[in-house]
Amino acid sequence: MAVSRFAYVKSFEQPDPLLPNTYIIVRVDGHAFHRLSQEHQFTKPNDERALQLMDHAAKDVMNEFQDVILAFGESDEYSFLFRRSATVHKRRHAKILSIVTSVFTSSYVFNWPKYLSETPLKYAPTFDARVVLYPSSQEVRDYFSWRQADTHVNNLYNTAFWALVQQGGETTVQAHQTLKGTMSKEKNEILYSRFEINYNKLPDRHRKGSILVREQIASAQGHNKPSTEIVLLHCDIIKDDFWQARPYLLQ
Ligand code: ATP
Ligand code: ATP
Ligand code: MG
Ligand code: MG
Ligand code: MG
Ligand code: MG
Image (cartoon, rainbow, N blue to C red; front, top):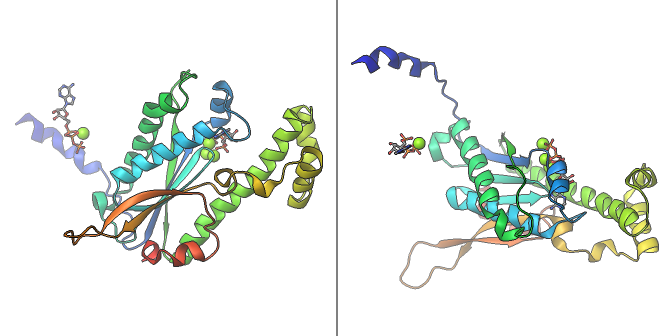
């Protein structure tokens, strides 16, 4: 058959398995969301609706991939942790990366009207993504600490920046100047003394980001397989408590 004469081209496809028995983390990040957030009038510094839409899309990824046991989101990004033993799609790099990105992006667009009903999309939002492999649980812990510390640093800066602009009457250029070189303590002080904002009282979602975790729930009588549910939290994941309460995450 003619097909067989052409089929050799398939052999040019390269195998791309991810190293076995390592933790897979996939991080998606909105492409040019600074612009997207402006063009669609996101509330600054934190548009609640947009954050909830991100959580929704992330949950859809977890429903597609049962091996994703933890996800962390902030701003326009989400990180997904696969259990170390995952063999989904034979751990093929391109397959996993492209499906995660595609499910996330598709869900973000599909569900946009549910969260931002009064703001029709002007163009199609897109996301980039990468895979990183970690050999030990310490690196996984440090990865998530790194992302949550980033959430805090960005949120403190953005909260101070937009308070100076929206309540302090500064231009964005002036606000940038005012904050240049300031330490956390000084930003907290500006927020408190000039705008009566106590940073520690701001919503957990904004200060800690979003944690989606697959929790094991006590199985109903007559069922021997423990069932799981995906829970949304906005808690600290830098300290030990979160991980000690869920040892199965780093098994
Ligand atoms: P790149 O394509 O390189 O990622 P980017 O413009 O997306 O560029 P990021 O560093 O990813 O840059 O930052 C995302 C930006 O999107 C934030 O700086 C912020 O301006 C905006 N943004 C994302 N989510 C929200 C939100 N929920 N509320 C308000 N602004 C948001
Ligand atoms: P996988 O997720 O592994 O790709 P799949 O179901 O998408 O599984 P494919 O080999 O990609 O399988 O085949 C795509 C199938 O989608 C076709 O076999 C056909 O049944 C259907 N399909 C795609 N496009 C059309 C179309 N334009 N009209 C009718 N059927 C279509
Ligand atoms: Mg980026
Ligand atoms: Mg981005
Ligand atoms: Mg980002
Ligand atoms: Mg197909």
